[in-house]
Amino acid sequence: MIIAATARFDWLNKLDMLQWFKLSKEIVSDLLLAALSHETDIEAIFNYLLFIYEHKDGDHLPVATVR
Amino acid sequence: MKRQGPKDSLGWLGPIVKKEEHTLDILPTQCLCYLLYSTQQPEDEIDYTTVPMEKIPRMLAIIRNQFNTTSGAPTIEILEFFVSRLGDGSFVKRDMAQKSLALVFSGITYNVKTPEPHSTTSQIEEEEFEEEVIESSGAIDTIMNTTTTSNSAVQSPRATTPILMSGSESSRCTIHCIMLT
Image (cartoon, rainbow over all chains, first blue to last red; front, top):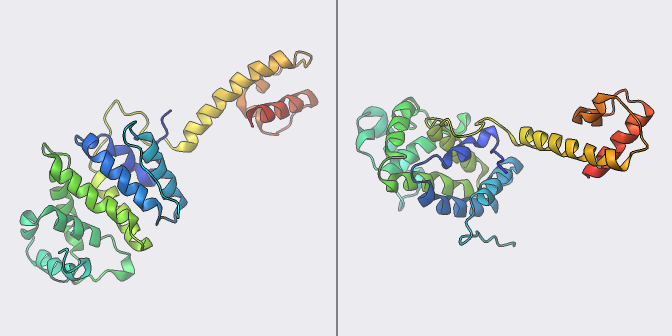
C-alpha cells in the first residue's frame, strides 16, 4: 500500500529519490521520531509517522518512548 | 558556529554574505544551510539588514549542487541540519525547517516511475474505499438474495450517500455502511 505524504510535506515523498537515500533514511527516521515528541501539528505528525513506518527495516525499528 | 549559537553566528555571517556574494561559494555546507534556514523566519521577525534574503536563489543553487551528488556526506549533512530542527521546541523554528526542506527539495523532480506525485491520502483512501464497496456489494448480493433491485446506481460506491434513495436501495445502502464499518 502506497500512501503519499500531503502536499505540504511533499519533500518526504522525494526523499527516496535521493541517490543516498538508503544511507540517510535511518538518520532521517530517527530524527523524525524525535521530532514527534515536540510536534503539535497533526498534519506533521501524520506525515512523519507515515514516513517512519513506510521506510522501516526489519532490523531497524525505531523505538518510541512514551513519557 | 556551534559554540556561539545560531543567533550570534547570523549576526556576522549575514552581513558578510549580503556584501560579498562570492562568500557563499566558500562557505561550509552547514553555514549555507543555516543562512537558508534564517531566511525562512516569519516576515515580522526578519531583520532585513542582516538576513540575506536576496541571496536565496544563489544559496539554493549551491546547496542543491552539493545535495544528491556523488558523495553522500553533504546530502546527509544537509538533511541532518534541517530534519534535526524539526524537533525543536519552538513552533517557529520547526516551521522554518519545514519551509527550508520544501525549498531544497523543490529542485528535485519526480521521475517517470514515481506514481502520482500529488496524490493525497484522501484520494488513495477514496480509491480503496471504492474497491471495498464493490467487493462488499458482491457479498451483500449473496446474503440479501431476497432483495430485488435492478438499479445500477446501487452498485456504485456513490450510492452509499443518502441522496434520493428508494426503500430497498436505502436498506442496501445501510447494509453497505454496516459491512464497511
